[in-house]
Amino acid sequence: MSTMDETPQTTPQIKMLPLHMDFKQFTICKPAPFSCDEEAILERERCDYTHRITYQMARSGQTGRRVRVYADGIYDLFHQGHARQLMQAKNIFPNVYLIVGVCNDELTHRMKGRTVMNGFERYEGVRHCRYVDEIVQNAPWTLSDEFIADNKIDFVAHDDIPYGHDGLDDIYGPLKARGMFVATERTEGVSTSDIVARIVKDYDLYVRRNLARGYSAKELNVSFLSEKKFRLQNKMDELKSRGKRELTKVKGDIITKWEEKSREFIDTFLLLFGRERLNHLWNESKGKLIQALSPPGSPSGSVNGDDLDADANDSSDEYLELPTEYSGGSSSSLNGKKQHSTSSLARRSYQQTRSGAASSSSPDNYDNDDDHAAAFDTEFVERRSN
Image 1 (cartoon, rainbow, N blue to C red):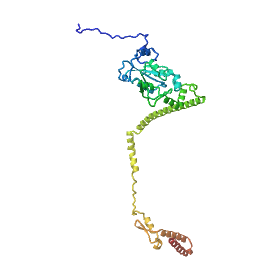
Image 2 (spheres, one colour):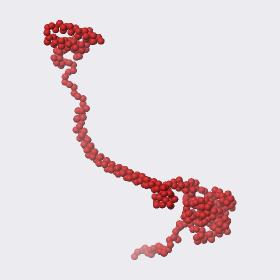
Image 3 (cartoon, helix red, strand yellow):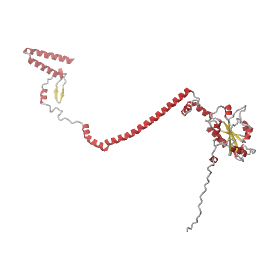
Image 4 (cartoon, one colour):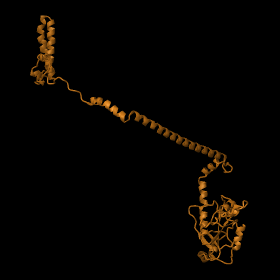
């Protein structure tokens, strides 16, 4: 038998919701109600407006009820500047119930000009802002005492720039005098007018974009020729984009193939000219390289003239030497032997020629040989002197 006390285990009960129940009523985040909706009416009826709240009471948080703050505007192309203004109005006091008035299209077009969004779109844009607790449709341009009393407004939040209308320098002037006005700050660099200016500046781009998305020229208020021009520009841009994509793809393919081929080249090079192969080639060609780079051997004969042939010695005796007056008194020696000048060689050649001619001639020509030799000597001396 177990000595431990056995206690029954209890399973937590999970409460199941009926299948037919609408889950929307359990949604925490939901759009703000309109002033004519039941939720807004109940909130307004619970407010004891006879208990007036001063600015000091609202700042201290000792009010006994929620402070009802009203902010109004057009809120066309709802942007961060609008959201920031509403956030300031929501947090200007510790416990704020924020009511936002939005003017309708008719009043806005008459007082301010044409809007991009219609009234319904502007209402929906504001009521989905998380700082807003209630929406007033068809809000007036100026706030009367009756309007303030009907909506039980404690303070009006707006930027401090004066707005003139119907002879008034500032339509919020009376509220400022009564201490019912709180100022918010504008967000610099963003406004509905700035956004419209950007659209106008890049008009062609937005028209081309909408034409590409299926809008007709009539819907965009574009002429027939302008439509064709914009469509042609869209086609050109499309071709350019396609060309860039194809070029990028081709470049990628080329790089991939080059990487594959480079691996094959490297493998083949290593196979043909690896470490062992290079060593083998070096050993084979080392001897040839040494032989090619070595200087040629010296000849076996002597350059000092000791081993010259006897014929050469004998023939040297045959050279005749001219007198010093013909040779200019100069002579050179090669290997210790006297060398004859050019004139001596010429004279010997001439004498040999003449002697050969004399041997073949008649004895009568012997006398003329001496005359010819003398003439040659004279002519040679003149040439040398010249």
